Image 1 (cartoon, one colour):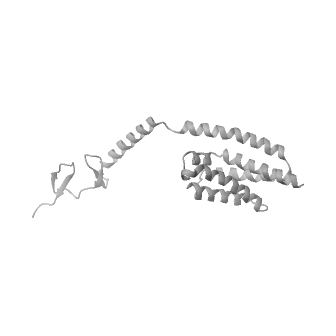
Image 2 (cartoon, helix red, strand yellow):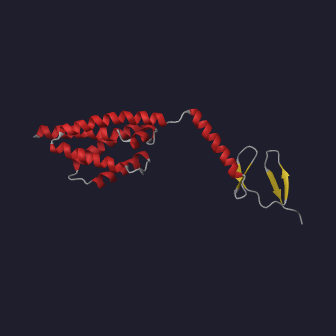
Image 3 (tube, rainbow, N blue to C red):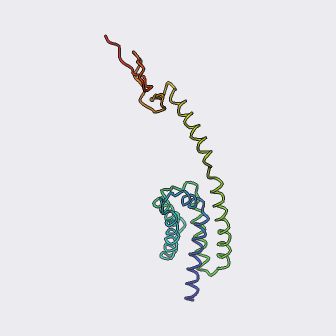
Length: 191
């Protein structure tokens, strides 16, 4: 019986690693360094923390696991999960924990294998979605053009200089003088 308990605990640790490893939100957070320079270490810590959380608490409810996962993502990766995937992750973890302790190791092993394949698919998708440097240049150029268009509208509270920097809009025009740096100086008429 003690060997079964140890085997179940080890198997559940592998299951937690597989579930979190296939979770796109966590993978994107790690790949993009949302947790800082130690994002990968934080993801590894998260696996151990969730494993310990289940093993230290009896009869965890799914909402408790969801809250714990959300707290870890927020605290460690500055990420708020809004796609609802944390509920699915919590549900999978609760199910796998239950299966481990009931001795259904074949089902847990099968799920780990499925999740391991999904993990590689997630990494491939993350790499496909990552834009190339050329796309960044085009986007930033388009953004600058849009910003310039917006700046020249009458409702804008900022005006652009010839160099492209922003400054407060001038007061109602009374008398204008051109400066060498491209700004227009507005002076009041003398009475």
